[in-house]
Image (cartoon, rainbow, N blue to C red; front, side, top):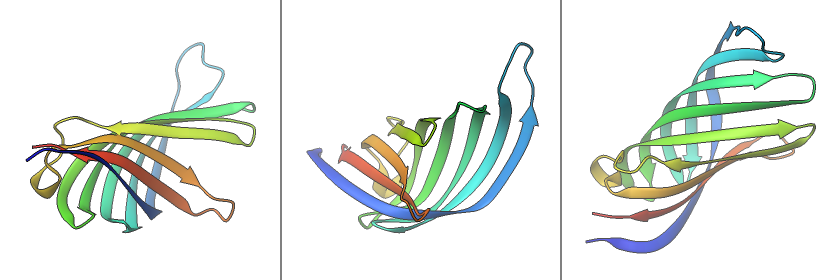
Amino acid sequence: MTDSTEHIFSGEFEISVWSPEPYSAPGSSSELTKVSATKVFSGGLVGTSSAELLMAGNDYGAGYVASEVFTGSVDGRDGTMIVQHWGIAEGTAAASSGHIIPGSGTDGLKGISGKAVYSQDAAGQHHLELKVTFGD
């Protein structure tokens, strides 16, 4: 049965692995880095994830794009899903968001779709908020 009701779930996460690898591109004025990261989630989202990021940064700003495979539980539904997300920073202002890749959910997360918003509070704690629906 399809559930078209939007659900909002949030959790905190810690970055347990951060493995950067610098690379260069002709004509670039920014530092370019490929990063492999692992996260551990708690709260309304419980589990782990593996992410691959491409990052660019300079004295004025920074940005990234990432593909992240989450394995765990969302509201008691166990499975995996892939989140594609991006972020940009200019000075102290930052924005980050993304989407769950349609059809990427498995097991209890099969049919999940929606948006993801990543943030960090003033104390440095990372957060993820999902606004999702569950399909067939």
